Picture 1 (spheres, rainbow, N blue to C red):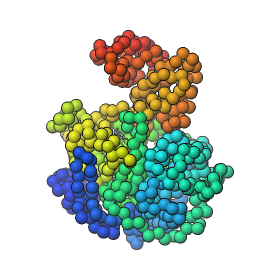
Picture 2: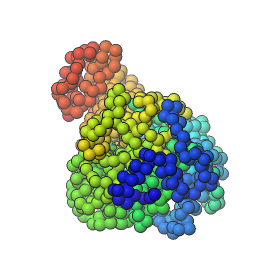
Picture 3: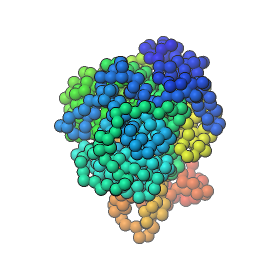
Picture 4: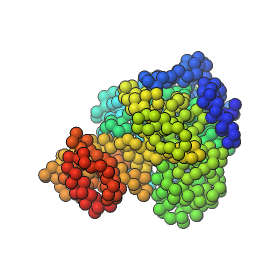
Length: 634
Ligand code: WT7
């Protein structure tokens, strides 16, 4: 059995084996890691509760597997290359040995500050080396990390800290993104006014700002690190002990804390990383995501470090100082495996070919994409201008909940088709179901994408509310994990992901529930009701369109848009701001009071007819009124 597939025939064989003998298949892959105690049972599961246990009885520590396990063979190999926001600032190379020491020191700091096994730690940091170090240090002491993307607002931080009852927060004084300098510590301070469980705040110095420090609660990370010892014995963790919580939006208002395990997640992140990208020992790998999202957890930190790879950590943005920044970094560090999002590709495409043509890009071997469906034009541009026609593109489909990639080509092995995530990885059993929950057999079919067998990286629960996990993912189609996506299986059996079938909008590869944004908008004192939908956006994939009903004293539409922007930025974060705010006299509702979003989506997409059956609407004329109002915005 191969832990690394090299031909399409090997893929076929591995897939077959993973379905016929899933336990033997994954047990063999799990043996490459250091276990402090081997597991007793490889898999125990039922999707009804749900209860999913991989490698039960096994004892390990994932930080040991990311670091200590490599020291002998590749202690002096570069683990992380940090490329700062500003190209004139020096980059940093951190070897496995140095990273091990930094993680041990940070683990001691956590320990000295009262953090131990099972405690929750909130991490709110920009893309600086302290961020991956913090994740690994939490894992080393057995604490559960909850990373909050550093673009979220203080309200959003407070919600997440309260939900998980975090004890400690790791943050920074400030951050830089492109030409902007953004305060960070003060955002956290505001959040913490409502978070009594937080006893300690550790502050990394990125901008050397003069920040307010609360005596008895706040400390600078650098001074704590200086006091800390450089060895830390990794905490023995049960395979099923939670490794981290990561919040993600669903169709209901409140984000869910998706919980990932230690053992299964480790095996899955490593296997998928090595196979999808066809990783080789001398590769330089760069994933441009932020560690605040699952992509960064699995494919900047855990996957690459488990594999012993060199992973680039980039603080900046694709378009600053100009649209050539990504390509400059690729040439500078001789990046061979490059993984980004369609939204970034489209933004750079819009900047014109000059910015990419200035660079050689000769080190590139494999390109990847993730986060949303990639349109054919962006795929072709990526293939031609970046890959120079010689690099395979892996269109990787997965989710926060899946822990790792589920459907994707294996680079250079699986035949490619623009817009297709192609075939399931070994161990992944996708099915398409119709609305009644019947499996659609054969090829050339389209339906709701579900998975019918567990894989090691899947979520185990949603923090503090197991019932919600069951309701959301396992109750819609009993016996299956429901992804929330629609997909098509073509005549050759390849999968094309169509998009969400629930009320989730995908903006630049980030997920927002419409209810979450509506709740924020409804806080406006002169807005009585709102309905939010996604619509096709040339760069972001989907834009956010908000229909709002105002009360009499509301300001004009322009002023209102500015106020809604501010409100959403304050309650969620700037990334969730609506692109369009349209004041409407009413919403298309059925007699039972349900908003027909299908109609609102069509109007926002610029469609003027084909609204289907509107006879169940309370006031069918409202559709024309909304349509007229929308025309001037399109
Ligand atoms: C949703 C998950 C997991 C990576 C980042 C997003 C959409 C993700 C693809 C792809 C088409 C994709 C799906 C999915 N999505 N990758 N390659 N092709 N759609 O994680 O925030 O949990 O969002 O992103 O709709 O359900 P996430």
